Structure formats: structure tokens, C-alpha cells
Length: 184
Image (cartoon, rainbow, N blue to C red; front, side, top):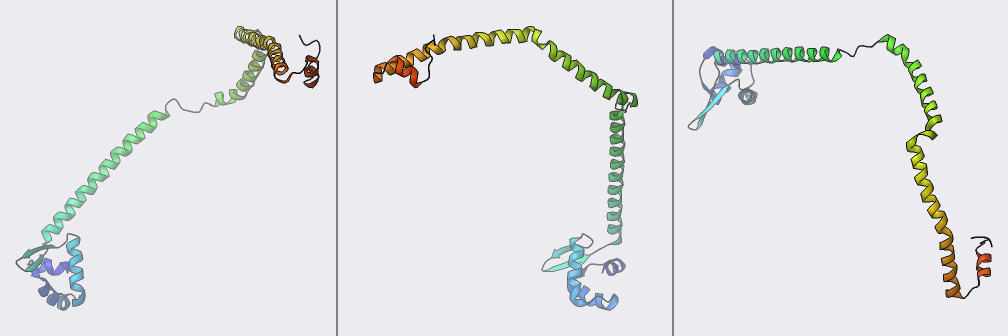
């Protein structure tokens, strides 16, 4: 179909192409319209409506120009890709600096881990003498002693309430709740 347009360098109506294509190129007349429409969709053939008729044409210079533009676009994309590749390679090379694997350091690693574990164990031994830990124990002792001294008061308050509410005696309450006689 393109060869017909390139050879004649003329504009055609659909009915003209349907007559020419089967004779000169062996394209069936039933498929001429579909082929022509696909060429128009691909911008290989131009079309224009003049009055009530549609005219179709394609010139070799347009195809050559389209190919040159496409080639230039692909070359530009190729060049951009090469520049990006160089920039990324430089970034990778820059990132590798200082990250080389040092075999000597890898050999020292197990010994360093063992030494660290020994130092942690020794630190745990002396933790009792740490001023912060001692201060924490003192605060805990103060809080605990407060609770120890307030506990009997709470028990006596509950016993007093139970005596008033239920009219029970101290000995029966002590026996029921297993409170020893020397509880004070």
C-alpha cells in the first residue's frame, strides 16, 4: 500500500485505492480499507477530509524524515543512558571507598567478641558497687519500709471496721484470718 503512494506521489480517495491495490500489489479489495486505516493510525499515511470525500497520501520524504527523527531520538536516549550509566558507576566506585573487606580485622573479630564478653561479666561482678545501683536500692528500701509499716495499720483498721460492722471480737477475727497474736 505504501509503495503505491510512494510511486505515484499522488492523493487518493478510498475508492481509487480499492481499484488500484488489487491490480498492482495483489491486496484484496476487502482488506484495503482496514490496511489503509491502520497506516493512518500509525501516522504512515496522511488523510484529510475535503468536502464529503477523504483523501489519502504518503510521500517518501515524510517517511524518510520520520525515520531520521526517530533515529535521532533513539541516539539521544542511548547517549542519555550511557551518561546515566557512567554517573551510577562513579557513585558505586565512590561508595566502595572505605568499605573494603579487611581480612586482618575479620580474624580479630572472634577474639574481640570473647574479650567483650569477659569485660561484661566482670562489670556484672562490680555492679553492686555502682553508685547509681546503690542509690536505686536505697530508694527501693525506703518505699518497701513504708509499705511494711503501713501494712499493720491497714490490718488494724480493717479489724476495727469488722468489729463495728459485724460485732465480732478480736480473737475470732484473728482466728478467721490467721493473724498471729504477736502481730504488732
